[in-house]
Image 1 (cartoon, rainbow, N blue to C red):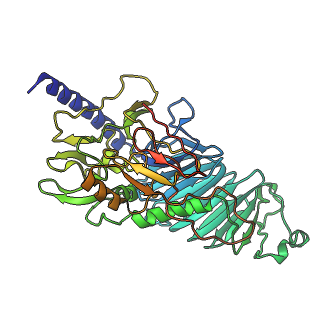
Image 2: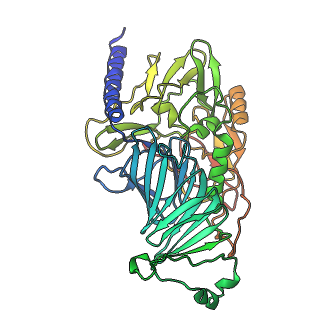
Length: 481
């Protein structure tokens, strides 16, 4: 064995040993780690490392006490272990107050909406039961609990909050009491604690609208602390970000279990991306494995990504690929002769701070964590954050890119393009899905049809794929090294 290869093996095992120590420490506690699964435009993230907000990237681990906020052109999504998702519209901020496990293994989630608009698509296991998962969304002095699977939106303004339920039902609680909001209904909560009477509603022509009465006040309404008012409507108004949220939801619904029937995993986060960006197959000697499209003969799973620092855990490896969550935190990568790198699912009882590798070829470069310092360190093309704005109408995907820079859902039939590239070993060009309109919705009640599957959130990164835009579209590329 050469000295060079021996050195690489020693380095790999040293890093793996450090990773096992991190995992062991995490497993001993009841803390949880969830995924920052979508970053578009200006998004900032506070990893609770004491350095405040910094630029956000997809696949960053989200831990308890983390904070996430979007700018005027920013959107973000956080995926929980069961595949549930919390999405932030522009100019929004949330704090992850609690991400923990109960004594019986139930997942306990408390999120504080600080400002703006959030969407939640949740399906907690056995919700509402004593040992079931719990999700609590706080805003102002109010709180929303989820007794069953639900898809809803909460908008927080200076003097009021609006809750719209697209699917399922919710329970809203305030100092004035508690109400249930049914599917396709909305609730407007007066945060100023001023009571609205039926006469007030009539004066404002609200009594002639679709409102069902309407002003719900507590029997102790004379108590200033209990003067919150709920106004319930049988409908809800559109919001400019509704189409974007609907497209993300459609993406997950379509791809969550498309090709993974043979994968026995207790987790659902990242599963949609695995089915969109790659495929499961059986490889002799390796069993049921997964492999990304467009990987090429010389591709390595560690060539593009970065190191992110977290308090109490040190540096964690973060993949720059849009599908790069589950294959880097569970199971292991293996090099299969004739196939290249494949991911072998498994090891579900532990979370890997660094992905595990078996049968690595001699040429493999093992990433090593920085010695010290809390800054994020990029490797190769680094970590990905898609620009805001419209996607280019045409997207070129190069061999060896493994999907890097391809926004999720932005291209239909990605598998067909992969087969074409396998035959020709040349770049492939595809039309992208029409992007979400940035124009506000027309005023009024009701919902509008989705404008397409997938957000199409902007151009790809330089060095990975070239783009050609139509005359009415402008695109730019960026890369981190």
